[in-house]
Amino acid sequence: MSKQGYHHGNLRQALVASALELIEEKGPTGFTLSEAAKRAGVTPAAVYRHFEGREDLIAECARQGYMIFGDLLDHAWNGGKPSALAAFSAVGRAYLAFARKYPGHYMAMFESGISPNRSPDLAAVASKSSTAMERATRALMEHVPVEKRPPVAMVSAHVWAMSHGVVELYAREGNRSPYAPEDLLESGIGVYLRGLGLIAPD
Image (tube, rainbow, N blue to C red; front, side):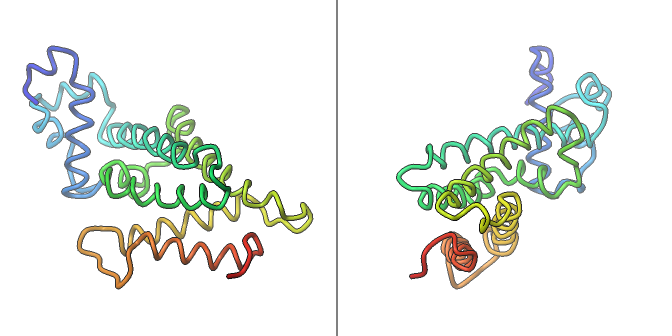
């Protein structure tokens, strides 16, 4: 991106793109605002027309990531079709697919130390993805008597944590496992859900 991009009003998104590249290369805390500005082809002073500082820029990367993430989870859910279990599994696979395809966004969202509650806009889009996970979880519980159902938020959080763990340990480049990350996640979730009685034993 050259300085011409800034004159055409593209600086904000050019900086986001530059930051995402740097996050992938150096991690969310491994680059400076000056580096992002240089890669976007502008002076550091120009950055402050759009962002208060580096954390504000990373927060925007996270916000855009949550938007993509929420849309992917919604698409994977597919209205709960062809079954609640199949749709739930698809949501888990979508989590892994997002981490692979959008590593810069993923790290900005989950590894930067930026709180989802940093701003109302960020909180709203972050909430969309957690709502998608909870909706899929709730659908799995419909056949279980209310008094025997575990809390939806707790089950959703456990599955989210399991998904995140698979990403961190086995879905990153260079991390190796004797099993595909998707198989690890699906089998782990299956064991967990059977233990709760949410799906029938094999």
